[in-house]
Length: 195
Image (cartoon, rainbow, N blue to C red):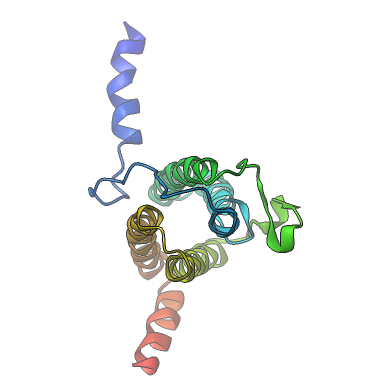
């Protein structure tokens, strides 16, 4: 009976209020392609990757949990969405003919994922700043790979993931505006000067 009463809370917690409602395309590829798999491995388990984001956001979730419950929930929710991205990339990498180990294959030389890729931070300011930077890096890298990949199925998947990353950037920026107005001014100030 207790478990039954807890299930709606678990379901509510895992429902993605931090993701867009758009459906994700089912992973598919036109044919196996080592080059495309190598690019996706960077998104999957490189320095600026889903695996890095998951671990960074979950660490920040644990650090914020006592003092900033809403930020902890945001970090956890976004981390869960990044886990879904990781799964979609793994399925695509497999279809491209490569084992989705947690590594990159730049120059055919494996570099395994390392926990030092995570920015752990010491306070709310530098953690949110790092999360904003992580989302910007992810968007830039995904766009680069979208440009280089000609497989329409993978392009569609990357387009959908980019939408989530842009939304995550918006959510982290809103959190910065609330908790770190000076960080928000720095972010928006530099954007205003660029226009």
